[in-house]
Length: 249
Image 1 (cartoon, rainbow, N blue to C red):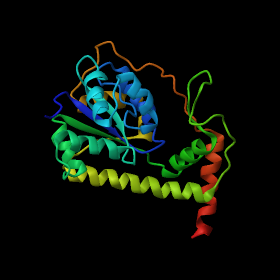
Image 2: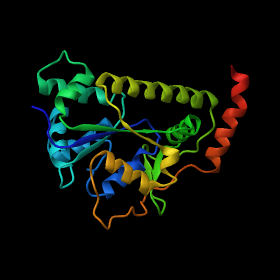
Image 3: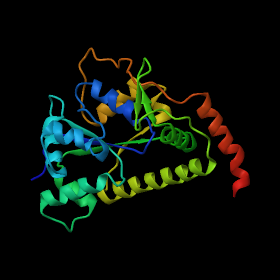
Image 4: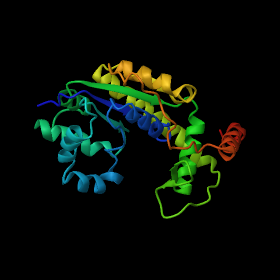
């Protein structure tokens, strides 16, 4: 049986600004609480929180218990290895192991829409990823508290090969998303990060309109706690990449 509650996926790639956009959508009070529920790094905590033991049970719990009062369920989604157990859980739920990922999604969610967040400057995005990967710092709240994937902050060093490989990987990831949308004959609502940061509240309101949702009449987007990590070092790395790139190929 398909999930009948209104649902959407925030489809993206790493270091696209998706955490900021997800927080903004959550603050509307009508668009669920989209975050990386399908990231296996967070599963131990989620399994304990929802008292489940399998990806299928987690999926059932998420759709029932993480929506806003209007029933809307949102999730931040990346097409990487973390997605594989979720697609398998969909097939298991349908008792249809032969289904493609796209068809399993189609048959599971009766009212699913897609928000596609992309970043125009792939080099800046790759720089952000490589700095975070080296330093262990993936975000920072106002006041200085770091969101870390590692025991401590480490100093990051520019590595042309790593940045270039990540530019290529980001391009492939976006191509996978396009293939997924094509398989579903779906037209996502596209948000460009560089445009979003210029007028975030307007962008959020446009997304809500796409989702056929309306915030409270007095709603406005507050100043959120997540800080932008890009700084002068990020700019230097980006400039150095473009300076070194012509002589590499």
